[in-house]
Figure 1 (tube, rainbow, N blue to C red):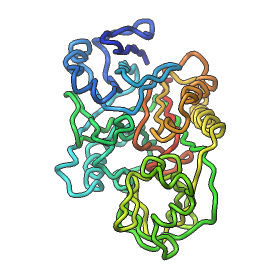
Figure 2 (cartoon, rainbow, N blue to C red):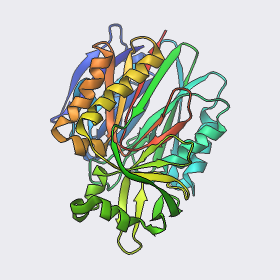
Figure 3 (cartoon, one colour):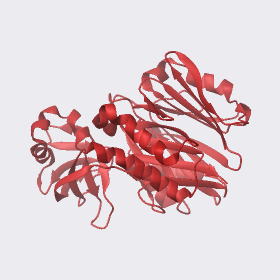
Figure 4 (cartoon, one colour):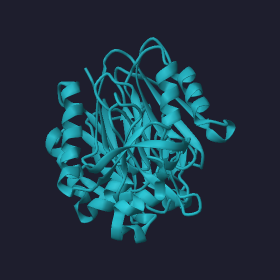
Length: 379
């Protein structure tokens, strides 16, 4: 695997790193993670197409860009990858052509499935796609379980619109999937939150899709405000600081769910993923040290699965973590770098949702407020 990384910042492109022997003409995949308003004003696709004429080029908006040990808010980070022993296939789906995100996931599974499929990497619109339904369809319709990771595009902390594009300038409503094929590609993954839970576990007694109306037969928003205390006056912004832990069933592993909006009239809360009736939820709060430690744990988990030093590491963390960590945000990237050492090229972005199996060999799920790490290497 040979990789070139560059960054657009302060109205200029500059190189970051390049593997010896790298050839732009041999690049199969380009990942461009950028600030949404920059992507709207800069013709990024045409620039990258001229550099990498044979590549599939994926561009998406973010809530912050990660490269090497740094985090930027007003840049475009480009990672161009030349696989030496792996083939790829890409597909772009427009969510506007489907009534449900599940159907979009089914279409992606049909387009990418194959006997030699090693894994799938997904970049999805972060505002119009239900990530829970998208991943459920992939889990159900692929012939066999393979690692599926990725994330939902971001839009800083604005939550106005997100942009994704495959072989075009990015637009609203797109989902892009990359199928990776061959038996010499190794993939490791880890996804950890690091939030503290508090209060008793309670049952979702009324919900619809990703809208939560009642917990333990009480109005969900009223109960949430009671737990937030003085922070309730800062809603909806404060909701990023206090996500919910959710178990779909008593036997399920807990997932973190971010609150996207609240409705004072219906006393409901809308989440970034499904909140099914009968699910068990607990309130959560931030512990800064644990959030940073979670990044190291996710990196170590991915490295343990791989068994050797990776060539590429993609870090996708949640905008909520970034807002909570503030000036300490770079510490979670530095924590991953300490686990990996200097060799791997690191890239990634802050997202509106993360996609990854929770444990090795598990099916993929949508996460919120986690650091999700995917590592790649060919042997």
